[in-house]
Length: 467
Image 1 (cartoon, rainbow, N blue to C red):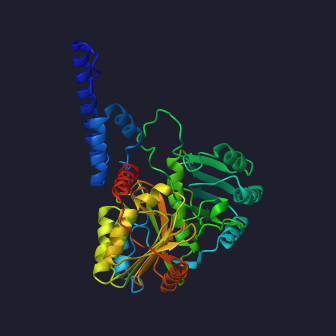
Image 2 (tube, one colour):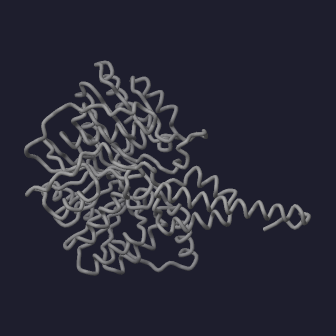
């Protein structure tokens, strides 16, 4: 709208400027979207277009800073070619994962799921103390608290033994305690890099400020892996009398799956400006027996929305059970519909959530989806404490745990990492973990919202979880 006091020549010039700004914004949006193969969800694409038309002076800079969703060169050149199915892996789950350009399933000499925070921390510290050549750590958040101090002490001991230590932290996840964390880690002798740090600078990789690194992995000597959903901070491991530790999952594995994780770390380290050459993992033979597991990396560095495509395919394939656990549940229309249809065709669909998460907006945004799912027959369980675990179990064929939440940011924007479990014993163990939390939960009771609440939920969902 033009200011009323402008004389006609200035008003005409302002109108031309506004039209030019809208045209430039839309042209840039179309060009960058198609050249970068962004493949946005329709709702997100519509939101950007409306913003560029209505508020071009704000929306265009925001788009140039935050608008990238996929890297134009995204491919997986370092991943091994898919393995030929064998009798042990020739299932629908194997066929689904082979179609998504993932590292192949690996036999793990050791594979453990650790739900207890204190034991998970002890396992991590013990793992660091066994390092002989290299420690690679990639995590969204590492805080200079009681957990960070113990971790830094273990890294310092490793550095004193001649071990190379590299730590990759997300620039947003560590933003609040950036300086304290940096002092702590540099005192341990670690090389530290920040993934997409929050600072203004001219850089050819513009538009990626919204792409956060949410992966959690620790690789020791290229052959042992610690991963899961836990960040390296106190609340993920250690509770106190007033507040219990957050309910989460860690996984420990030896063998080929760790070497796949080492290659993934090398690629992410290079994206953060580190040595682009991947460090060679130790040459060890594959285990001939042991649990079968597989890395599930997902994010802007992949051609497809890998985790999203796998989850959709698995839900549509399910004929017995779909168990989902996540702290933040804001599904898009396709994922929502897949769950509704699964429940209506008689599949046991269950969803485990915290009664109240640490992100209030996520709790508001999930409400519409929960009401529709409950009406379709999905059983929704609310845990009375903070659940941070991200896991799913599909039939008796496939299970997974790691860093991937069931919301648009995690499924479409973040760099994420899960471990897929193909081993029946581990699938049953994860289903048992789910059942134990279900027994401690209360059932969700759907309540029709008032008009104001309904509008508020829609606005939070649209503005907070689409762009």
